[in-house]
Figure (cartoon, rainbow over the protein chains, first blue to last red):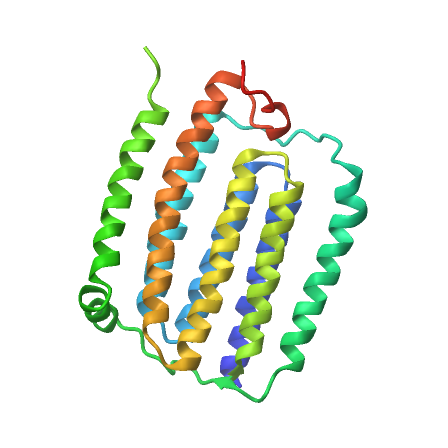
Length: 164
Length: 100
């Protein structure tokens, strides 16, 4: 019961943050809403027992990536978003289509509910367990990821450098 | 005890918000943030299914998604800075020519 209440509280916070991200016109407000969404998703991970991922979510996503976003917004001195007329097709077909699609998906998910439930902290994702898996079964993907990060660092430096 | 479908519905709502923001926003940084929102929504369903099937590898996949998202954010923001330097705008509607 407490689990369900906490799930609903953090879920509502996440959805409100996501809607606020779309509703705000200034990018810095959108960035702060996204921090709220990521923080509440970290709480959802903790409810599922994934404590390592909850910590990583706060440190990497809400910490590092969002600082990068806020830094870029301030560096470029981005003002409020300028309003331009979107295409008519997007308004006439796109938004109703998205609403119908999401309602259909939610209805299908609720209807297919067979009483399958996730107990609180059922799968304890400790740093130790994930580390064992990461350095034994997923060693090759892990090493490839390190090469990817190296390429990303070089790409970011080359792209953001001022041409002399 | 929370049904798995609740997690999936929350994930679907967040993903839909991300898609909507990606389509209607007129600021390339906010569009980029919508992409991050979609990645987060998918991560939530990964973790929910990992608990459901009692498989820790689902959480390892979330770890990989986060790493790729961090790399993508670094490169993407560098591209945004490079575009802003040549165009002086963040509106993607004004970045519609290959030639300056």
